[in-house]
Image 1 (cartoon, rainbow, N blue to C red):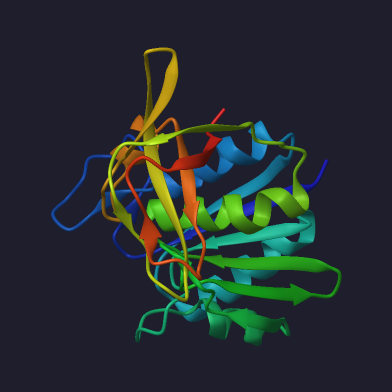
Image 2: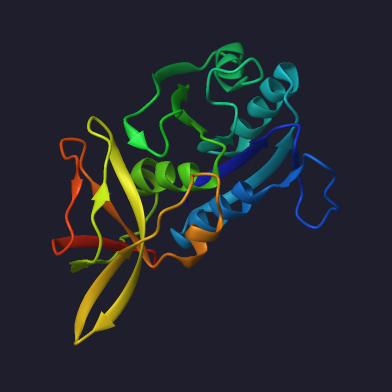
Length: 221
């Protein structure tokens, strides 16, 4: 099995079950990534919760790489003053070869290599992180083949030319035909991940998709 370690970063992030204080949020991404990894027959060796501190993140990353083939760092992959993922990778001698991808949501992504192991700087917003996982991590490292079906799109949806867009959808069967309903949401929201039956992809060369089009849906199962 491919072995993964997950590092979730942020001063505002706390473990599930603890009482939340003002400005704090639960560590959702670790649990989402763990579920996706195990669903794809991978193994999670370690999980870490790290505050926004460069030296602690660097030492934690080195520890994670001792047991894992792939390390996912959730949050800190953008270019803010407290986004330390890039610096931590460089601190331990990692080689960054991608910083930013044309995926929406999911742009602030880092891909790096350390010796014969891989590091992914994942966006902190849950939906963005899930998109990057399904677009890059899952097809490369895990034994998960997602089922695809076709259905009729029930609403016009807009893309973002130059970026590949992932849109969550809900499916209904009407008159023995599959109907596809887009779920409009922000990348920071968790509910659409739970409510969606799957997602459709708008290619980077298209401005959107029209109501009535036959679209391919990648199922979440």
